[in-house]
Length: 407
Image 1: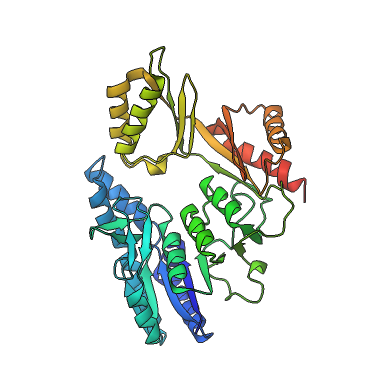
Image 2: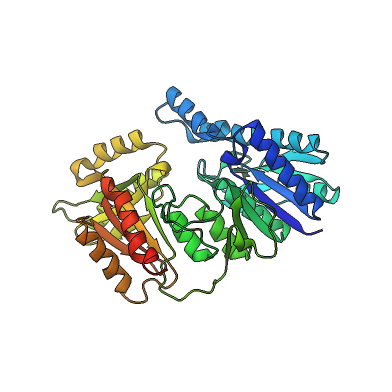
């Protein structure tokens, strides 16, 4: 039978009632003639609650011990879902990330999958069982428990789908797909039927919360189709884009079309200024060494002769107080941390083939009195750094400018 991998997010299994609904949907998938592997996140806000608990004990929790703590959330979900499936007459077995063969590098809190050895999963599928896998976690080559970073259950699901040669990977949440903007901010936001891997990855990197950027990159590399759907939806029919979003290679769309507007509120801008000293390049290297030592991964880096700027997501800073103190102690006022900006992005294939979209967005912001601190671009994205209090206004403005006017 063809293999289907389904992933259910924390909101989909937030309580026993929703967990039972997921169990019913999983059993129906099995009855429809599929071998089923289910990847689950922790229930509801469990991960956030555990993280808050850790920070009551330590302002800078040790990353290894944090992984040991946070992986407990997914283990609870996988066991309860397996029990619920059995109550409905299904034959299910649950595995942790390590038991299911998720091998990662040796980095805690934001590890990367380097290999999947799904032998136990394949054995249980051959016995006719539904396999429930704890998402977000794996084991390093040193036999250390690791986690894959925020949204890592998506990566678990796509990696498992690739290793098993799955027909598709279904990412189920409380949202019925990827939208042109956050519907809580933009009332006119609409569901997008199809997206390319690159567009989806850029939206995820820019703050859209439906799919994980690393998971999309993995899917692109392995050629795995992703269906982003609501957990309460019917099983996919002949056209999965009719009530969800399908992520695949090159959907039919004119180049330069903006498909979505995304924003990220909680970002920090690190600005390194040599203050006239020689060796500006050496100073920049020393700052990056300190950031690496604290496990900081940047989003946008720009180096010029007189300064270096780096944008970082605060959710990637697990040692922020310690990092700030290290930078202050070693560099004093030569490193400035700007904490009042947000990142606003528009995304689409070939968006920068000409500068028309940059001009259009910048002019709209300027006319609305929204000053941009900087602009960065890629082949699929334009990002403006703007004052954080104006971020939602700016999202609505650019959604109206690029998407509502072009419908």
